[in-house]
Image 1: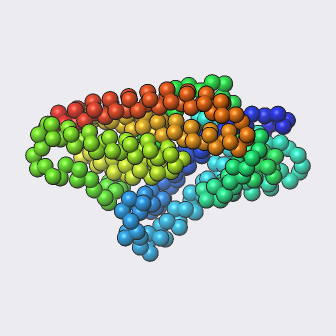
Image 2 (image 1 turned 60 degrees about the vertical axis):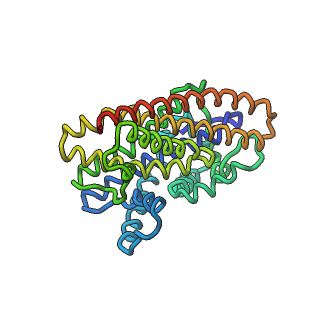
Image 3 (image 1 turned 90 degrees about the vertical axis):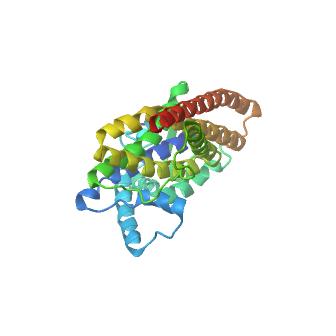
Length: 340
């Protein structure tokens, strides 16, 4: 806990968005392991199947699992976000170079902080609380931050190209490896869906398989990138759906023939998945541009400042996009050769 005066540089919209998504991803992955010693299944991951395949899989038993999983998630989130204030232990805040500063104004600050923590532990209530950021203020704050005299400040001295890559890598690989580990723990596939992307060809040639893989992987990468127009929400759903499928495949491959995993999966794994990491980084650039425009408008700042941000972000997302497409091409050729 620290003290400060009113002259602080508050964190930007996009820093808040990225930090919260990182924290939610970490919390979902951590809490997903808690039910398994009790032989229960964590149902929050299953929500992306509902997003992808509709509501036909929802049953009474699933609703019960979802309720239990949600309760576990909220409890863990409450503890996590409490120590976000008392200790600045939030991984998301550290990665976006943000910091929570609490002004101790009276003896009721602990109870107020508990209220703020409870609100942030529920994603929906946190969104409602964040609506205050759209008000025309010099230093935008959430409703709870205004009431509790909390400032979310920006500690970043300079933005680096690798900042977005590091954040994107965590968003991509953490759910993927979580599902892989869970698959190993339960000894069966976690994912009930299927792919069938090369079904039209029984014995595809190298060129046919290569074209299919490039088309499918490019389509997936573009879905990740275009999600930036909607503050990464579609990106996260697409990402988690992929993590369920690919993580289950990796886990089952490790349970089976280790040689097949090393020989058939690993060669294209790193170039293909890192292409998607760069696709998420591209989406983050889009979020930065969109939210910076909104933020500059609400603050009444001149358009020239936004142009400077646009110029910096454009050079970054051109690099991310070009490198991502190149890696997809390389990965498709490797996989076509391995499977051919």
